[in-house]
Length: 87
Image (tube, rainbow, N blue to C red; front, side):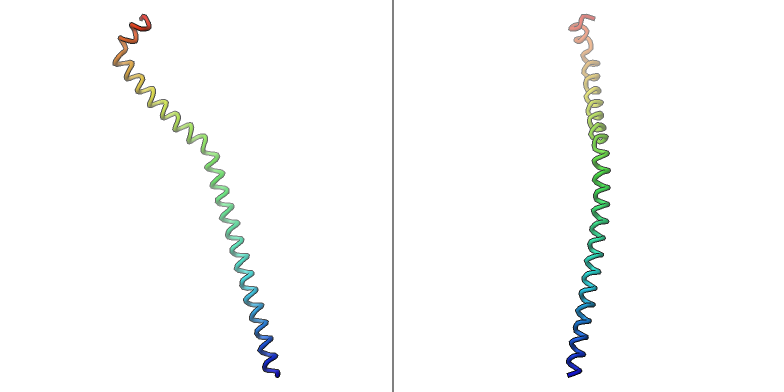
């Protein structure tokens, strides 16, 4: 009889150890998730902060490219433009 009681108690202790281990793992997983979300949030914030700069830079490059094309066309056909404008 005592052997059975001892087995039950050791079984309960084992359950507590398993539950404690699971709880610790859950806490570790949750803290890891919070850290990742924090890093992801910082990264997302940085990207959103830099997005206008990136869009502006891309637009500026396109405008510069357009200006170069326009200058080339005007340089090649400057005489025609002078006739049209009256210079």
